[in-house]
Image (cartoon, rainbow, N blue to C red; front, side, top):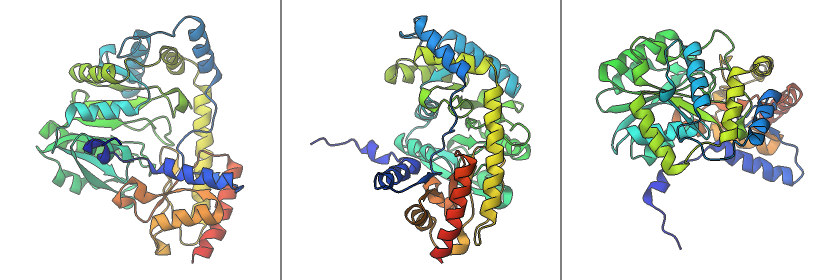
Length: 389
């Protein structure tokens, strides 16, 4: 019998995959389940990206590559980030990883010592706090306020940030709320980071999914490029979740440390997928933009439908592809409501508490499903929540 290391007990999980397992079990019993729990675009990867990967296989991109990424992809990423964030980026600031999560994982491991505090959003992506605890750090959750369009409680942020803070994690557009940090909020956060010289991990993986102006990056603010680790990837913007391709842009000394963690864990990212990444960034964007427009229509359908359900209210998300309705009027814990919808209505959603303590009273719905299935889910929810009483 193995005795697991104590640190393994500090790792959490993603509730989306737990709910997916329960939903699949019901499907095996013959139930029809509408999946609104998983944050994955339901579109195919654009054909020109697939074609580039096939050609790369034929061209022999099947061997080890440089640990921080193929030069051609690092150069493409540097150009892309320079253009979209308005900051100069050099290829040696770029580290390519198998998915974007390793940038989060490696950055935290490289910067956080036991006992160090890390500020993060709550409700927020649960892996942030999980990895902080794994590294021995102390997560410091800052509430995202519905009345502030799910922006930081900046007064609380400014009280909690200080010399003990070794990292600030931002996510905009945000999972699970769909909130986007305003330029005013970013300036206040940047002022604190500069005052105390606190690095910021800016998770911008949903950047393409913005339904208004392009979201601002804190890296673009004066003096912040040298304090920011920009996390992005291909899974969401190009429907490439299974390709596992992400990247980080950061100061060179940290890029070297992250590359050292890469060589000790993954050696390198798959070569032919990196060639596909070049095609994604520098090729035709029509399919990606059409996908975002489809999500805009779905967002409007879902938000209108949720607000028509007695006892439910839902802000219109400014980004990502999640709705985060308020269900406090039912007087039940969010997890009870989510369980009821799955068992009674066959609609798989997540409780807001899967994203932190301040998620109580909310549900998260991914609208990565067809408009027909979303309409069917809303109809089921109306009847099911009426039965909840």
